[in-house]
Length: 143
Image (cartoon, rainbow, N blue to C red; front, side, top):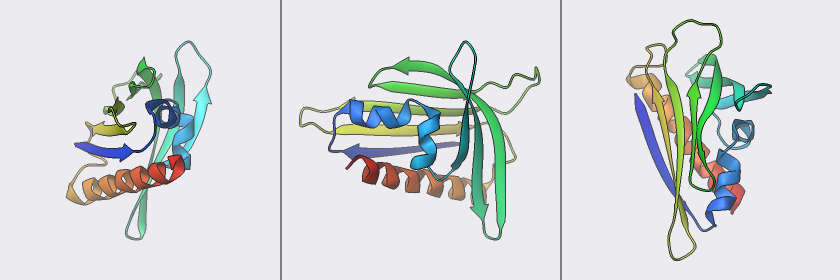
C-alpha cells in the first residue's frame, strides 16, 4: 500500500522542513502519529506509536523508525528498522520538498506499508484520511 499526498505552502523550504525532518515533531500535526520517543544511538531513531480510529475500533502499532536519508530542506526518509532481529513489515515515510521561483514550496509525503495488518480498502481510506488531515494541519501550522 502506498499513500501519496502533496501540499503547496507559501513558505520557504526550510520552514516546512523543520516540521518533517524529525519524527518527534510529527504528533503536533499528523494525527496518525500518536506518540514519539527519540532513542539514543548512532543513527537518528525513534519509537513511534501509530494510531487510527476505524468506527468504534482503534488500531495501533509501535514501530522503531530510523532516518535513512536526509538532504536538508529537500528530503527526509524514515524506515522501520526494528532491533529485535526478526523480519517485520516495511513502513517507509518519505518527505520531498521542492521550491519554485515564487517563494512557494511543494511538500510530497509518501507513506508505504508492506504488511497486511493495516491493509484493505477500509484501513487504506482511514490512513489516507489521516495523512490528508495531517497535511491540512501542517499548512495551518506554517501559515
